[in-house]
Structure formats: C-alpha cells, structure tokens
Image (tube, rainbow, N blue to C red; front, side):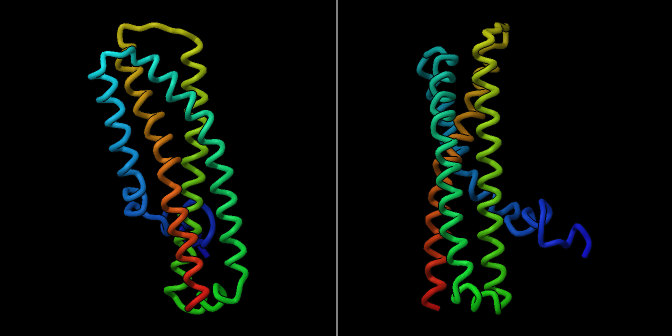
Length: 173
C-alpha cells in the first residue's frame, strides 16, 4: 500500500478530516479572535496587557483541554471495542464514520499541541520585553493567534460532544 493511500499517518488524517471539516471547526474561533482584536483596538487598552491576559489563560486552559480530549477519546475507544462498532465497521458508511471520528480527534489534539507551543513562545517573548516601532501590530497579530488557538480549544468541546453522542447512537443501530 502506498504512503498516500495508507490508513495511517498524516495523509490519512488529512484525507478523513478534510478541508471542509477543518474550515467548519475554525470558523467560530476566527470570529471570536477577530472580535477580541477589534474590541482591544476600540478599547484603547494596551494590547500587550490584553495579550498577557489571554496568553496566561491559554497556558492554563489548553493543557487541561488536552487532558479532556484524551479522556473523551479513551471513552470512544471503549465504544470501538464493543459489538456495536464491530457491526458498524461491516459497512463502508460505518468505517467512514469511525475514520472521521479518529481523524477529528487527531486534528483536535494536533491543534491543541500547537496551541500550547505557541502560547509558551508568546509568553517567553513577552518576558524578553523587546520593543519595536511595530509593537502594536506584533501584539495584535500575537493576540489574534493566541485568541484563535484558545477559542479553538474551547469550541472543540462541541465537536467532542457530538462525536460521543454519535458513537453512543451506534449502540442502538
């Protein structure tokens, strides 16, 4: 089996999660992040202070979200070993459903890991205290990035709820 058609790895993740799933999952975080940046700009507050607050929240919340997502996926794995899922894998539609859930969780965990790394980098850069004539633009760009990743972490709960519900529905099929 070629690497492109493998059921494992990044190619498989992108094939089953897809651009449509990605765009669906990032729409609300983009709206929230844009609102936070516009609100910061209009409030005339120091963007660095807002960035510090949001980065602090991200560094507290996102690691907990990783634990929550891993726990939810563990719950789903117990469904996967049950008779209902074995029955579901007998059809192409059922296999696609399970692969989609797996890909969704993998994509979510990947973005959460990126969130932690990005937030730590931003927190360290803030501590360095560099100044620039472009500081306001840099702060707003960083604020958008951290707000987006934090919003994604929080809104991903909705997808997890639906995935668990849909998996539970397979027990009554």
